[in-house]
Amino acid sequence: MTAHVDVRSSGAIQIIRLVRPEKKNALTGAMYRILADALAAGDKNDEVAAQVILGSGGVFSAGNDIADFMQAAQSGKGLGDDVTRFITALATVEKPLLAGVDGRAVGIGTTMLFHCDLVYATPAAQFSTPFLDLGLVPEAGSSFLLPRLIGYQRAFEMLVLGAVFSADRARECGFVNHVVEAGALEDRVLEAAARLAAKPPEALSMARRLLKGAPQQLTAQMREEERLFSERARSPEAVEAFRAFLEKRPANFGRARGVGEA
Image (cartoon, rainbow, N blue to C red; front, side):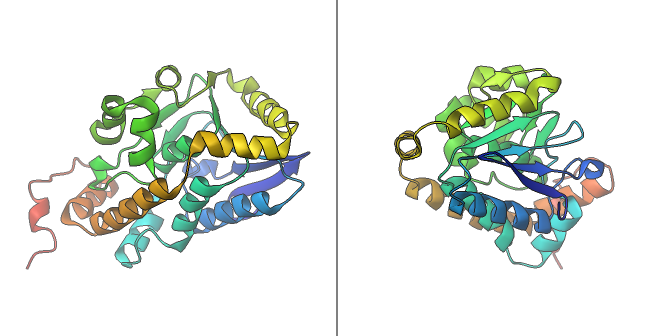
């Protein structure tokens, strides 16, 4: 285990586990780097047939580590190379990708799931994407994938209104396959991964490619998302939103217009 991410193999399955429970598995730049490296290595490894992402401590991921994110945003380097590598890997991974979600999945903790082939969740799972409340825009291809997955209005409800989806609502909408008890979650995910690993690999790869379609439109939308996200991260609205978050007060976007002005 390195920098709060545990990567190990179980037979033909690579298991990537987020292990920063004291921070609700919030992602740092170092964690993004390991996640991107793990997905790339799993794709290249002939012994790996499927990859699984799990949380720990009753939480999947609280999204970006706020302090880490603000430092990156102020640097003017956009999302950062490691974040870009990870979300690109999600869109282009060639082997089946599964996830098991227990507890909160916030921001990237939710949007990464739209790239997965199968998602299992516990009754305690909650999915939210509070980008707009932080003065940002959706990321990781979510503005492309989610309307196609659950329909425009429900995607708008999650990505723009900021509604929190329960496990049952997520299953009803279609981005969670099954809701299972917490004690059975990991076994169910690994069982499904093992079933996929036992299938003819070339036929599996072709079927997956046919279902997902060509990635060019998705990756183009991801580049536009990243451009706007990086721009918004330095905006007066985002500055006010993050200040309010750290100061534990409601944001006042009426005064955001004056933030940073002479």
